Amino acid sequence: MKKVSVIMSVFNCEKFLTTAIESILQQSFADFEFIIFDDASTDGSGKIIKSYAEADDRVIAIFNTENQGLTKNLNKGIAMSKAVYIARMDADDIALPNRLSRQVEYLDKNTHIDIVGSSAIDIDENGNQLQKRQAPESHQEIIKLLPKANPMIHSTVVFRRKSLEKIEFYNESYRTTQDYEMWFRAAGNGMIFCNLSEILLLYRMDNNYHRRKSIRYRLYDCKLRLESFKYLGIPKYKYYYALIPIILGLLPEKVYDSVKKLDPRVKSIG
Image (cartoon, rainbow, N blue to C red; front, top):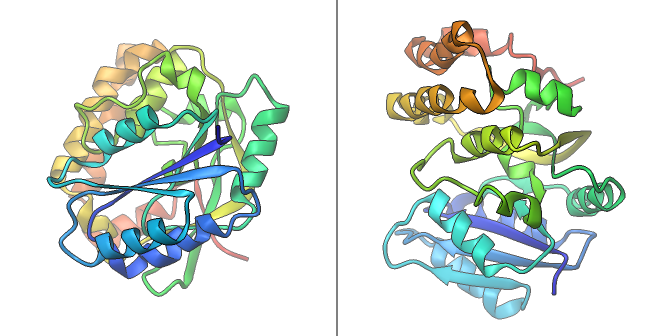
């Protein structure tokens, strides 16, 4: 049995996929399996995944004949896994070499922690560093931010499989924002969060990042907040937090970029 299962879902990401996969295979921590779903890609992603599965027995490749979406693939990957820890990874991000070793070491030593993430550096399509994505560190800070914004960077997260079994992992009625919704349920069930201050990931921000967060995405975000605030016992008068994604989505891109600079999770590099 492997200590960690790394789960990645891929759809048309050939441009960045090799770098993302290599960043996991070159981790200093070696006791892992790497479950990769090709979600019916129409570019060369499937060929890349197949080549790695043939060359490295840590890679377990699943090829969907129809697009299933991230949420279903994550739950399928977890169901396949027998590992103690589940690690997330996205197909366009880059894990730094000590990512898994640091997070596994932390969870091994801190048995009361159920979910651990880290800080990251935002990079553009060419790999240029843009800004630091500073995640709140303590459980208290994370829970305080949760109603206002997602306090965990999804592709940095490692969690205890046994802990998240209690809430049946991701809610498949959410094709997007599935991680944010799960954090609310996890918090409501008393699970303990932490983010390491260390930068353990390079987080890809392509040129269409703002536009990709469509009004549909933002309505999902609004909906999940309205449905999830109950898990934290948030008073009704604070439900206006649910409007934050809608307001951000209505801003022109230049204004949006200026407003996002006020986000406490975003820090300049230097």
